[in-house]
Length: 199
Image (cartoon, rainbow, N blue to C red):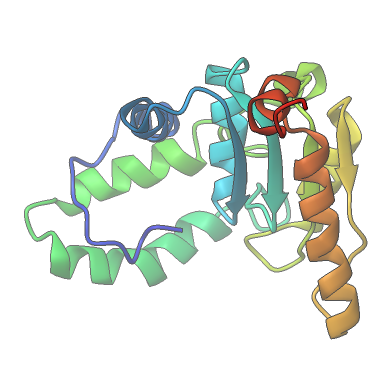
């Protein structure tokens, strides 16, 4: 997550999920990177969903790690968490941004589509062909059910065991699984480019 970063910019009130994707795709364009893997932690699962929707020909594979998601039994948890944990520090750094703007931003992040991943629908994930690996979590903002739903709906999805962070041996096996997953989805054109020259 980049909330501790030093870059600044306008708060994308009207369509924040698309604005994030625009920034991320713009960075890839600037770096000259056409195809890429995406690994997102926490809110990064929502970013991954939107990137796969906006650039399905560019995201080669995605890892959803401890993804944020809507929790029907606690529907305002992400809004509250953001107000309690992100907003105070943000307002100190950005006194030029009004509370009204922040309220609209949080509303458009978490209340416009109050289901599942917030950024994309279940129907999108059900029809998404991009390979996905899901590493579940189960804390208030990272519902286990969202991870299970992503893995169940996406036709090319896999899911790790849960919990996966302990003991250390299991955590290392999970990290190895992520590496194997990504290596398995390196495009053939890239493999050919970096293969040793034929002798």
